[in-house]
Amino acid sequence: MIGQQLPLKILARLVAAQQPPPLPDNSPLNQFVGPTEESTWTDTITVTIAPNGQYYTPYVKRIGSASDWGAGAGTNVDVTSRPGSIILAANQTSGSLVSPSQQIPYVVSSGATMTVSWNDQNFSVTSDMIQIRWSSDGVSWGAWSMPLINEDAVTVSNLYYQFLITLSTSNSALSPQFNTIIVRMANWTLWGGMSWK
Image (cartoon, rainbow, N blue to C red; front, side, top):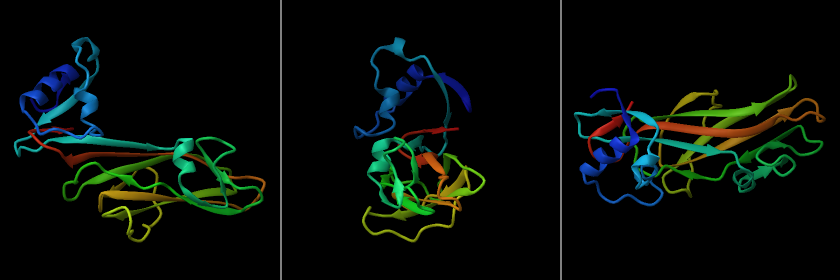
């Protein structure tokens, strides 16, 4: 059954058959086993039955709404003129914003990585830089990483993370525009005997 395409309704039955422990309301798994009408299951996914008895499920987080950036801590940036985006404040040549902290819902397996990608708009005289830091409790934070490259695979160091977005320009009339960060991770442990591939 390695790599077999299964309808989501079949996955729901497989999951239910394993009688897992209750999952919290915010568990990503709930989005797959929530519907009660079988007719609502129309998509397919690829699952792998893992011999080690571990179940892995993907974690996807999009950071980029007006409320996301509005809740961040910014210096010399504007998050209201273009809702859902970060730009430099008027007449500024550099600025930065620390995103709200995010929590991965479950303890990750050793060596887990997550892919960090983003959407932005730049001119020849503008640039942006993205860094990440980690925390075990969402209060005490480690140092910022080296600048990331779009689509970087980042080693997961803890359960909480934040991003630092730094914008710069050599022409104060032109600002970079930073829109969205998307985090994807596919190898953090839940329970049971399946894994995502």
